[in-house]
Length: 81
Image (cartoon, rainbow, N blue to C red; front, top):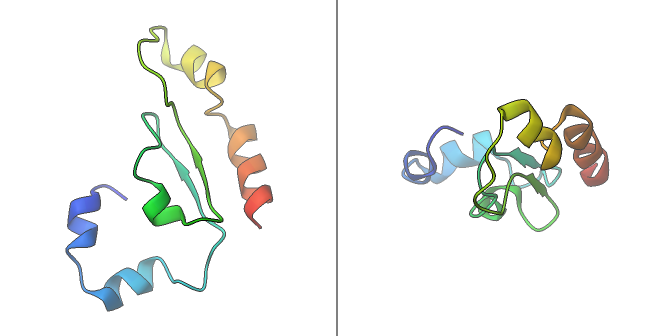
């Protein structure tokens, strides 16, 4: 989802067609903070991201340190299904 504000401005029928309320198995992946994603993943969803500040290193090292990896995504998906 490129922009929450633009998505929120869409009609309810459009939003329902993109994120059906019947689908509760949702995972968000954000290289930044997970703040705000709960609105879209719901109570049963999982958010993967970095909720701390100040780390500096090459991207691949930070992703590994903070668990933004293919394995973490797969595990989160398995948890919500």
